[in-house]
Image (tube, rainbow, N blue to C red; front, top):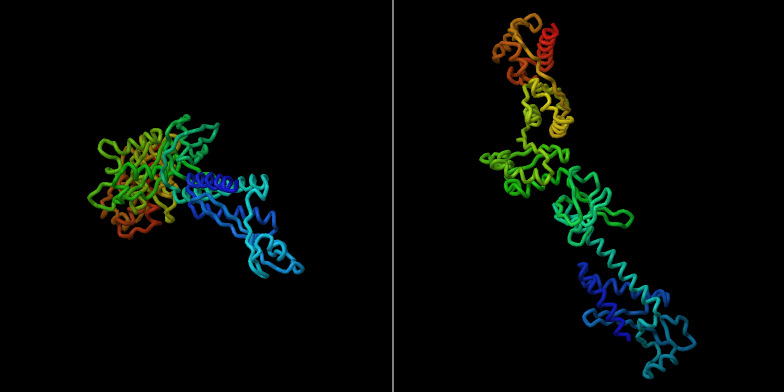
Length: 419
């Protein structure tokens, strides 16, 4: 009976542990802890006991080891045994010998055996959770492919190799329509524990998801020839991706888009036809702002001294493109460039004005400098940003003066329009 019970316990939990990826040493440690817990509950201490496990044979052997003492000196029946009682078991025993007696699982009673089973199952579940937590914590930011097994009113539950993943509403593209059994691709966003419960949160709205799709679909990105500098998204509507090539022979934007857009189209389809603008990154903030506002054509950019605020001028017919539907284009451009962007319509000039007509406001010296850089009309000056005026004049026109020049010319045209 002893062997039958022990084999049943060890074999059943050994199979479970194998399925859950728990190694042999860990299983032995758990089994020993459980049986020592049973001993402590019955005897009050486990110091005088040895637990010997042989999972290959399915044996559990528990030995109660006590010291043989004179009957009148017996003070602790857990660690000592009287000489008379000991010699009933083995007549060769002498005083102060060790007396080893095997105890059996059945000695603990049916209730204790059931509790041991429950404790083992609980410990294995806890270790399984720890293993899953460690595995998926290392995979945060990685794309996984799973099957939808339940669609709640708000959350989508996904089966990934037997592990439950959850996609809350904020991580779902609003155009997504998934049903039970559908295959779904997403990125591991977060792995957390809430009051002992393991939650693996996945996302399709994260910028990281788009970045990983680029790595999967575009070999140059995967190989590190092209670096993704930054990704900003309004999931399902539009995204902007700033890229840079580490090889001058490779066009970063062309490689990402592919011949006739074949590479980018596969990503667009995955994201429910989300428009993706791929932009060449540059350290020139003004040029980067111009590129970030594509598909709109930008005439000029006035950037303040902090580099955090920009006034952007575009042709009248380009204003709606620059702002985008619901303001999506200008919002994404602001996020990409980390600059607050305001879009202004270029005044509809009927006639240009000779720059010399501003001599009274600017002074002859400034007029001469503007002529030197090829700005002989007011409109040609407005086509430059404040920073461009400073650079092209080698700082002979400082920031404050450049601001004054641009402001004065704009005000002049605005007055003409009103008249």
